Image 1: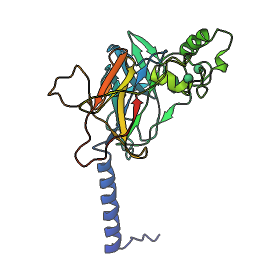
Image 2: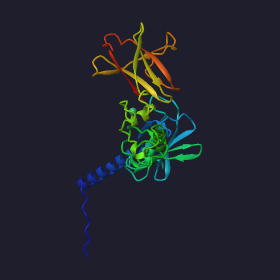
Image 3: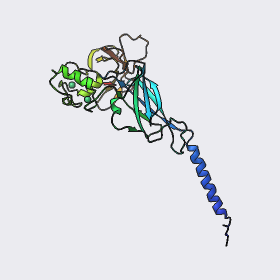
Image 4: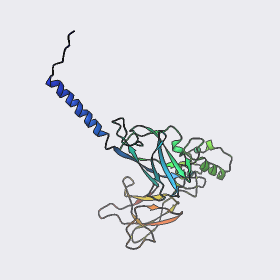
Length: 289
Ligand SMILES: [Ca+2]
Ligand SMILES: [Ca+2]
């Protein structure tokens, strides 16, 4: 029997050393973990109103375990009442840096828990979403309630609209892109803005109510739970946010960048003067979140 021993060759040793260093660097990639994926948005009730209770919790569940949770904070910031940092693993090694960390691609679902009851938001009732982007920020608005025709509008909101339209039509006759009251605002946009989709006189309107020494006074109906930002333009092409003052603001208070509505009421907003050298605002529009 001939036993042959492979000669030691410097080149092979260097190659093995290169492999070892590659493995070591691969292990390093798994810790620290990939950056969190930040999810934020609005949790709305079945009538479209942003949740006004701080006893609600948003939970992200993946593979049967709760990976992250946060509390709903009414009026937290314009256009958001929750913010959830989701731990993501870099997925390089078999062991997750912590048991609840998500791999870069994993199905997940978000639940909302209120007073011990768990609600699956409409947006999560289809196929589970995939999580893919460490370090990114996603907006995920969540709507509670049942959406039996799957059009994104909760049944309760559609039924209320059907009653106000005479009760003769079915859920399937209420479509998000339709304009039930013919005021130029789609049913979906009325749902999001909190305006009456059956009343053409109730819409999402921004008026110039007066001129003050500070500038134009703009008027709009603010709906509880929504946030509003005014934009101005000189040419209807380039728009910039317009800071403004409310009549109740102290004379030395800084201008507001937006208005989070704690109640439904008419708002009169005096636009601040544009910064020196900036174009004058001649047109205004209102954004609701
Ligand atoms: Ca529906
Ligand atoms: Ca409408």
